[in-house]
Image 1 (cartoon, rainbow, N blue to C red):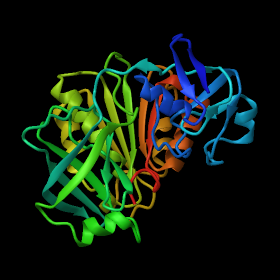
Image 2 (cartoon, rainbow, N blue to C red):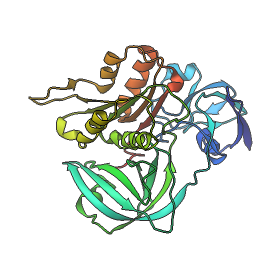
Image 3 (cartoon, rainbow, N blue to C red):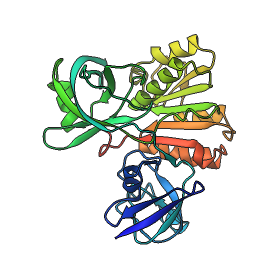
Length: 338
């Protein structure tokens, strides 16, 4: 049995089958909704139910608490319709025609840029074209049927190859292969692009780009795309890591800031060693210290779920950031690469 789903305030409608999530049904019908992990962990797809009944699904408690459920909140990647439903989601839009493809790619280069981070460059088939939005990700398809998702770190303007930033996870099935067995000329299969985390280019608000760890990868894609498009929209990059060595490409955002007046870069360390002269503490708190009023900004946050959840909460409650101006992609082990 199918149910009609209505999105407010846009008025867009689509149908959802009883066995599919509200998010999957929207994506199937060409409607773009914000999402990240698709496992009920990152909060990127959180929305408000205005009317109707849903099955909330297998969400993670830290992403949707009882008070939020009582207030009508739902995670679209988990919830399934039990009746016709009306949803408030101000970020919904009709997707442009960017096809999801299943393609092979050859490992062209590997560079260990930190003890636990490898940048991986994949060469695409010369006969194929691959289009994506700056900030999106791909799924690496493993031989046993499992998937591992990684954000694209290069700009869409760079054709013919893709760049991934892979952090080693202890006992990780795929990351162990990358660090111990993978070599140049190996063949991988991937599917994409995927994700609702991408730069909204039809707006001119100043942008805060907030990253933790390898969450820098999609930020790199967004910045390089903006530079390629000759955009002068203000961008302020905040990159949070534990130690200075974890800022594995620190010279790159520093160079962007030196070469472009509209780009700023602030690294923040939570566990600095002696000699560090920069900012310390939680990266999202550094943002609030610099921008106590975020009401005129947009924020794109990528990295650990704890950072994203804290940033979303504090930016909205303390920094007056509108809910619809926060875009995020959380790197969870289930969805973003063990």
